[in-house]
Image (cartoon, rainbow, N blue to C red; front, side, top):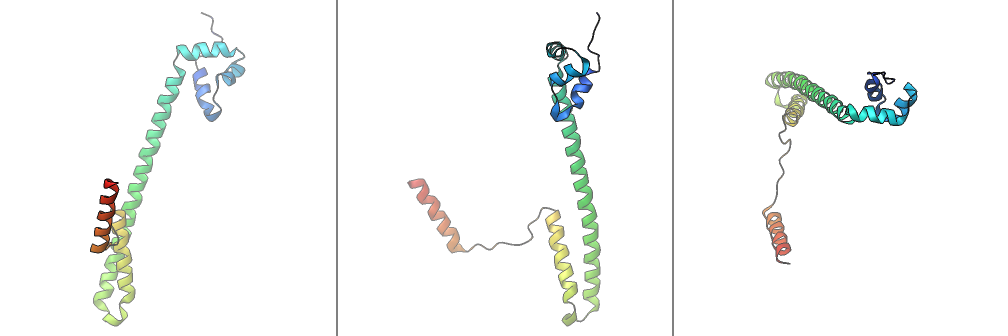
Length: 143
């Protein structure tokens, strides 16, 4: 069979990215759009594009997670160093001049908790607020 459309036409089609169209491929290879559509259907171009896009997306997400884990690890090491220096400073200073060390320790502990997904502040809810919320919820279910 004499084929005017080269076997690497799909690669060209895929490389077009957002501007991807059968018409663009037809122009490139000087054939009709109908001929490209026929080859694309036979060779499952749409499914192949979808599969490649999914592989690329998975790779990007994996890289982002790896990068985030590396960043968190680096930040945790830094925070541990700050905590160590703050604790050393606290043990060597009189209480009246140790506030900078206390602030450094407090900030580093909050950042460490944040990186580890723990709450950084405790939220206090009054009994009155809980009763009011329950009462409002009860009224909503009745009406």
